[in-house]
Image: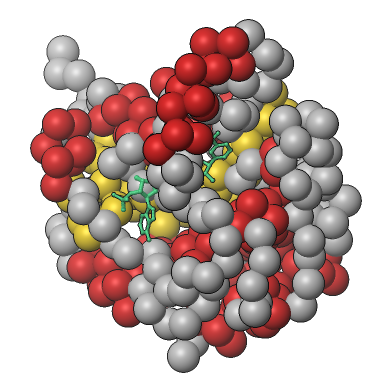
Length: 296
Ligand SMILES: NC(=O)c1ccc[n+]([C@@H]2O[C@H](COP(=O)([O-])OP(=O)(O)OC[C@H]3O[C@@H](n4cnc5c(N)ncnc54)[C@H](OP(=O)(O)O)[C@@H]3O)[C@@H](O)[C@H]2O)c1
C-alpha cells in the first residue's frame, strides 16, 4: 500500500544563525515535511549547515523587511505554515539607530518584527502558527531576572526615538512590546484572518548564557559571563539554547500548540505575561503607532 504523501510546509525563523534561533531551526530542519527559511543578515553559512533556505533579512531596515517578504512570496517554497520571530539584539546604551532612524533595540526587536508579521500574515496557511520570542525581562521582577532592570513603558513614539538611556532598559521594554504584540495580534486575528485557526504564541526561553546576545558587551564582561555559566545553569529559569530551541520548535509543530488562540510559555510551561503586557489599551496604542512608524 502506498504511504500518504507527507504535507510540505515552510517555516521562517528570524535570527536562525546563532543561539536560540539556530537551535530551533536545527530541530525544525530535521522534522519531516518542513522547509526552514533562515532569515538573518548573513544567513548563508547557517542555512548551508542545516540544509535550509537562506534569505537575507535585516530587521533594522524596513526596506529589507519588505524585500524579504516579497522574495519569500515569489520563492516557490511550500505553503508558509510557521513564523518564528526570534531575532533580537541588546546594546549597552540607546545610541544605536536603525536605517529608518529608530532606536535600534526597539526598531529591531519590535518594529522590524511588527512589519514582518503584518506582511507575512496574509500568506500564512489557515492553520499556521506564529511564535514571538519574548523574555522574562519584560516583567518588573529584578531579583528573578538576576538584577536585570525592568522595562519602562512610555509613549511608543518616545520609545522609538529616545534621547539616551540604558540599553538594558531599552531591551526589557522592547521585549514588553513583543508580548503586547502577541496578545494584540491574537485579539485582532478574527478580523485580520477571519475563519482561520492561526495560533499566536509568546515564548520566554529563560536565561540562556550560551548564546551571543552579550555581543555588545566588553570582551572582559563576556569572559566573566562564560566562566560563571556552569554555575548559572544550576539556577531555576536558567537553561541552554538547545533545550529552549527544542521547546520553540515544538510550539510550531506539536498539535498541542495548534490554534486558534494564544499561549505564553515560560521556558517549558504555561505562564502569564505581566499586567502591563495584558493592558489592551496600551497594546492598541502600540499597534497604531507601530503601523504609523512602519508605513513610512
Ligand atoms: N540569551 C538569553 O538569555 C535570552 C533570554 C531571553 C530572551 N532571549 C531572546 O532570544 C532571542 C534570540 O537571542 P539569542 O540569545 O539566541 O542571541 P544571539 O545568539 O545573539 O542571536 C541573535 C540572532 O538575531 C539575529 N539578528 C540580530 N540583529 C538582526 C537584524 N538586524 N536583522 C536580522 N537578524 C538579526 C542574529 O543574526 P545576524 O547577526 O546573523 O543577523 C542572530 O541570529 C532574542 O529575541 C532574545 O531577546 C534571549
